Length: 168
Image (cartoon, rainbow, N blue to C red; front, side):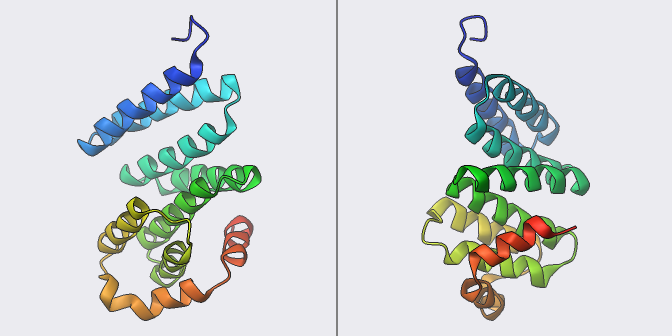
């Protein structure tokens, strides 16, 4: 596909192969596929796909326990998506940041971000299911933290995302 000038198709295929191995639990291969797709996307300048891939890479980094790399990739994904006005990627990055904070033991902040994701009208049903999975992965059930999630739902989404950008 690259020889034919179709880098976008190649990057999409690599991302899709990554998704397949992700669901099989092969996170090392997932990261490799995403990195390859990211390299191609950068070469062809597909910024919206770059934002998506950076978020995917951050998710893979979390699965491999590399939280520093996850933070860096998620921050870059979030910043680029926000700059592009790519709301689905912004929402995904905020959801992933919530997961990262939960893994780091910052449950209160994680719940605030996850509640903000749930409050967004643009949040699709798949992302809502992912939020429940994240809650479970950090050891909480939605019913037990509804009040904490409500704080996130009431928070100003733009203020929360600015806080993410300003975060150390």
